[in-house]
Amino acid sequence: MNYALKERIAEVKGQLTSQDILVFEFDSLAGKKFACIYADGIVDKNLIGELIAKPLRAAREEDGAQEIKKLLAAPEVEDGKDIKGCIKSISDGNAALFIDGEEDFFIVGVKNPPGRAVAEPPTQIAVKGPREGFTEDIKVNLGLVRKRIKTKNLQIKTTTVGKQSETAVAICYIEGVCRKGLPEKIEKQIKSKEIDIVPDSSYISGFIARRPRSLFKRNATAEKPDIFCAKLCEGRVGIISDGSPIAITVPYTLTEDFQTAEDYYTVSYRATILRVLRLTAVLIGILLPAIYVCAQLFKIQLIPAKLLFKIASSVAGIPLSPSVEIFFALFVLEVLNEASIRMPKYVGLALSVVGALVLGDTAVKAGIISTPAVIIIAFSAICLYTVPDFVETSTTLRLVFLILAGSIGTFGVVLAAAFTMCYLVTEQSYGAPLLSPYAPLVAKDMRDALYKSNMGALNTRPKVMKTKNKVRLKENGR
Figure 1 (cartoon, rainbow, N blue to C red):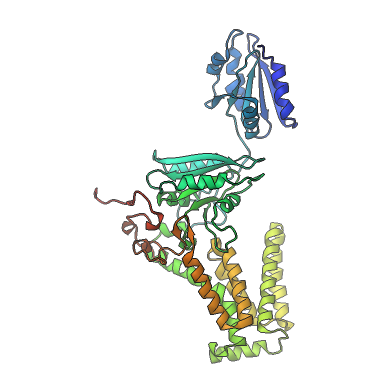
Figure 2 (spheres, rainbow, N blue to C red):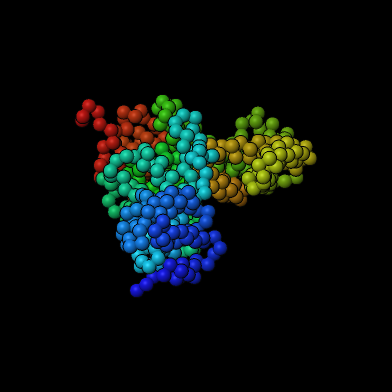
């Protein structure tokens, strides 16, 4: 059967009708005809010339497909199976090479999608330690992981998600360290969902969460490869999605949000102090507005006498009740926060100054809200941002506690705190209790929870990970 080059091109272009699908036709010195089909913008055209067109100038008229394949200088050359697979490969950023008169064709890896360079991530910033962060390119991200974990036991399984986007998703784990069956379980969860497009790893996070609507998240996130690799070595499974600079790790425990990469690059006592400080700040940020409302409405004795007199003089003449006053201040804070994020950078900076100086100061002078209310809401917001990964949850909890404090007082706050603790105690993330190592109590794991031991004491992997290989540090061959 004669496979004319023009017919093969027409067959592909009949399905890939977009104008950015280009065809590069060229001949060898002996007159052999070739056609290279690719998507403009996501391939390196120089590679097409250097690895495909230039070597094939030596092709002879009588050369078959396999002889021509040997001439190609590209390291990634695969035999084309069918037109459907060819369409997918071209859309993915590879080039399809067709030969006049030959049934066989080849898929050549010349992918070079646009992307940014490796840089320090905006949220997980460290004074000490590596500055590299993940990018939106899955190959770059996997390269950053391979750079740090060179063992043969590192396993990477790649699958695609999204009917239209066909987004590449990599499941990473260390064989012999990760719990047996966990990667397969996660892969099954990911493949069980059908969706048009997966633009970010947060979609994958929703797929694998046991309770997607839960207030508390079930998966940890990492923007730095050193954090990601450290969690893999503890027995966790990592998930990297193409197009997202944020990786996911499971199982997840709540203490992870209060730990930073810098804790492991500084002395242990300093890391312990900072972890306790973060926990204390989050508790203050969640409870302070509610306690302030409770004290004014129901339990005035909670406030020391001298401070009470100061507050009384400040709130005199305020037309709003304490709960409405705090709600109003909180509403203004959230509006300013959202507007400063969405607005252009320099306008957002000006908006922050206007909101803090003009709105806040004017509202106090006009007698709409009191000075203590402004101080409490501002301090609460600052405290919550000491743990950026927990902000979404803590902001919602602050609102819930405030509503209960304004309606039923101290009893509501205590009831909400008890319900939250009971909920956390019963929740798990792929077999790991959310409040581990404190509920249930795991003594060995407490050496790297809120308290941070020195590296010599962290000789075993976390028990809640249920790893096969429990030892991660040996001394003198023991």
